[in-house]
Length: 368
Ligand SMILES: *Cc1c(COP(=O)(O)O)cnc(C)c1O
Image (cartoon, rainbow, N blue to C red; front, side, top):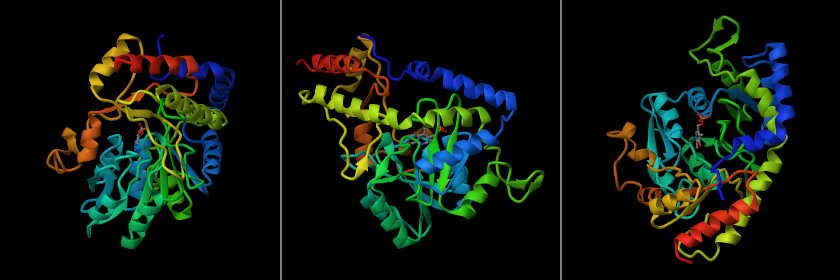
């Protein structure tokens, strides 16, 4: 049985009429850049995250960069980031001229290790960016404590964790800002690029609104150097339609994760993802650790089962950070896991038959 890693067409088929209508309305109103459709989406996205404010931008990377900029982070500053993340997290720090300081992950949940965060703080540290990787919240309590002790800001990278919860509270407002991505493959995906910043701080909200529009709050009057980080009207309208379905899609992802656990429980060679007590995991990715990873992936793809690796090279070992980050051996857990992790097919529309087929082939590979 063919099993895609991700199937955006299957999702579109379930919401086609609503989406087509939403796009048509934007075109009729010609509200293409930010504007009313984006504003409606921002209000609803803030509400589901119990945030006072939300600013829509044009990517998750822009969201992170904007958050760094409005905190005034720049040359000479350090920002603590996990090395086990997508490259955009440290990249946003580097774009300001500040230096990302890479910290290893915990061995069970793959998120930034709070003990190692504490050890990485220096006199230059300005902020910490915990990433809720794969859809599971990082240990926000411990990170907040460390930040409070050293007067640091916490900015959450929620790109993979829309409506995930930590101790019953949605991600995105425990830190001073939460940065989201609406890249098409994310749990809430645009039909193009998109991102957002949530915050409860009104002054930061106003600054973010101006920043995404060339540092301007009144047309052609520019108070500071910003960017063109505006969200497109069409994306706002599409995301608003999709936001109404997000709860159901997350439930389906969680059900699919449960099915994988059942079907894979006898395959002792692999390590399944664990849910941290107090965390609501939204399973952007279902990542296992597997011996002979490359061979397993080849075997699965020969059987038309498509997998991914998130991520094959930890950020501190990327060529872009040569000479900036300490090299091999500095984050041993992330380095080891990078050679073992495999992301199995995961999306809301995945069927039990498909999950059973994936599990059967994995068991077959390990000779069950
Ligand atoms: C996707 C992602 C980003 C970047 O988002 P874009 O919308 O692709 O710019 C940042 N951080 C993490 C953890 C991501 O997964």
